[in-house]
Each structure stands twice: as C-alpha cells, then as structure tokens.
Length: 490
Image 1 (tube, one colour):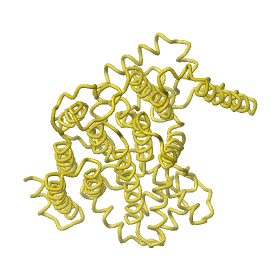
Image 2 (cartoon, one colour; image 1 turned 90 degrees about the vertical axis):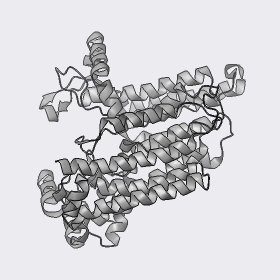
Image 3 (cartoon, one colour; image 1 turned 120 degrees about the horizontal axis):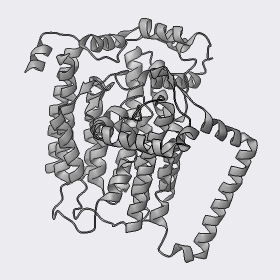
Image 4 (cartoon, helix red, strand yellow; image 1 turned 135 degrees about the vertical axis):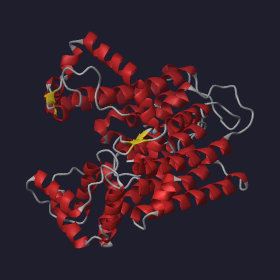
C-alpha cells in the first residue's frame, strides 16, 4: 500500500516503470498458469517465457550501473563496439575522461533512488551525438573481448539506430539477456535429470540480476551450465557435432573469464563419459597418453618462451590492495605459512558462510545495498533444496565415483575463486578473505547439486515440475517489487 501511494503521487519515470512491472507481473502469472495447467508444458518450455518477462522487469528495477562494477563492464563492451565500428582509440587522462562521462553524459546510478531512476529515464531522449563524442573518447582504456561480444553487438546496434544512452544500454542488456535465456533453454533441453534444479538456479534473483547486466558473469554462468548439462547428457547419449560445437564455445568463454578459474569445470565430461574398465582399454589409454603428451609439449614450449618468468612473478608479487590502501601477501607468502593460511580460510568459511549462501540466492542485490526480506531468501533456498529430490521424471543415475568427481570439481572451482580474492583483494592483517560474494559460486552450483543429490530411488511419486514452474516466477516477481519498496524506504 505504501508503494502504491508513493507511485500515485507522481507521474514520473519511476511511477511508470513500477506500474509497468505490476502489469507485466500479472500478465506473466496468467500466461504461465495457462501454459502450465492447460497446455501441460514442461520446464524447458516454460523457462524462456518466464525468463523473458522477468528479464524486462529486472532491467526496469535495476537499470544500467545499478549492478556491481557495471561501469567497468559497460566501458569494456563499449570499447569493443568502437572497434566494431572502426573508430580509432584515443589516449588521454583516464580519470578526467571518466569524470566527464559520468557527470556530463550519463547518470550516476550506483545508489538507487527515485531521482536516479528518473535520470536514467531522461537519458532515453539524450542527444546521441553527445553520447558518441563523450563515450568515444572515454573508453580508450577499457578492455573488450569475447566476454563482452554479445553486449557489444547490442550497443553497436543501438548506436547505429542513434539511440540515447539509456536506449544503447537497453540494447546491450537485451542482447545479453537473450543470449543467456537461449543458453539456459538449451541446457534444460539437454540435461537428462536436474531440470528443476537448473530451473531454480537460472531464476534465482542473483542469477537474473547478473544475466541482465553488462557483467561477464552472464556468459560465465551460461557457459558453466551448458558444460555441466552436456557432461551429464554424454553419459547416456552419444555427442552430436552441434553439441560438441556448443561445448567448445562454452569452453572458450570459461577460459576467457576470470583468468580461466572456472575452466576446471571442463573436466566434468571426463568422469562421466569414460566406460568402466577404461584403464584396460588400449585405445582409450592411447588417446589419453597422446593428449597428455601434447599438453606436455605445449607446456615445455610455453616455459621456454618465458612462461617460467611469468609464473615466478605471479607467485612472488605482492599486489596493491587499492580499496584498503595497503599491500597484500603473495602466493609464496601463503604457501610458506600453511597453518596461518588454513586458519584464515576456515575462519572465512565459518564467519562468512551464511553470507555467501544468502548472497548467492540474492538477498543483497544491486551494489549489495538492496535488502530482500529474509523469509523470501529462505523460501528460495528451500525451493533449491526441494528441487534436488528425484522424481519419476528424472532419468539416469550417476555412479558414486562420478558424484565424487562432480562435487570435488565444483568445490575446486569455488576454492580457486576464493584463493584469487585472497591474493588480489585481501590486505595484509585481514582476518578473513575479503571481496568474495555469493554470486561467484553460481557457475559451479549445478555441478555441485547434481553430484550431491538425485539419488536413485524416487522420493516423490509424482512430477513436481508444474509446482516449481509456477512458484519460482511468482517469487521472483515479489523480489522485483521488494526492490522498489527498498528504494521507497530510503
């Protein structure tokens, strides 16, 4: 009621998007109800419909720059767009140019308020020529590449259509969201069991936030999910050429994001596709030995070309932790003090484990300043846990060794992520690892869940897909409305 009263008091952009979100929510519930209970559609067909509605609502509620580090991601995508359009890259004083961009051309949208929403809305009609001049200069130092290819294509189309900043940002986000939805839909069609778990993970509020942003988390999560789904499928079905191509594209994304920390997930098919007694099969052993030999030769060549010096520098360098105005410890420092390192990691797990779980789901959205009510977060966690129970719809059963491999690989990816923040983001004297957020664990979550659950005997005799298909989108709609109420409360 407070939100409705607040909206009714103004006829501005904020009032418009809140009203539009309410309408979209009602239409979404009606459409999904028809598809689920009249057409009896499965989750793989329900997901793209629900995700499309929720993507629009999430973009309206969390516009560009309202997500973590999105300025840097937007800059990188815009830089790649510059290259696509054949623009020369200028040089100059970086800080000055960024200040010019934020103050003169764009809005500063990290702290959401009614004024910031209205500022973003006004940028739909901003002078596109001014945007071209300022952004063309301001992005000289940003790094573009494969992780930003999709959003850069959207930005480029927006610029060719001479849209203002908000229109350009909307096009980039639209392309990013569509690509993510297609990847999740593909994975839902391919995965032999775990559709409910994947459905829940793909619609977690934190997943929706990152998927509909300029962050490379969108492509990273999509690639990790596709790799996991294909690994499970190939345990019972022969890989097709199109599936292999999708796996290769996903592998390239995993290798190009966050220094390849999540590339360890590419090992998942190895522990499902090898038949029993593979070590006695001469052909398989020969292929594995040949592959290992090739990797060894590549490693030797890389070391001879200066790779050893790079490794030494990486292990011994103490990086500056700018946010703390301090220095961090090097990898060697942590390795030579194993007891202290283990104590620090254990203390981090104990003191921040709950925070990681809650932020993985999405209790803190935006720049970790939009609080979603705890009951909603706990309910989403309950749905995730209930999705792990096997039903007659789930076909296929992993061996015990495959389960162990999936869990170990997923946890290894998470540990590598934590260790990277330990070296690059944690200052000397810190009691816990700094900078880690729950969203960092989303890429490996599907592998962890499928490895740890879905035991052979069905615990529920009937399909529960329709329940999850109906409940998750409604809860997400409630989360979006909570975002607006959080803004009003400020």
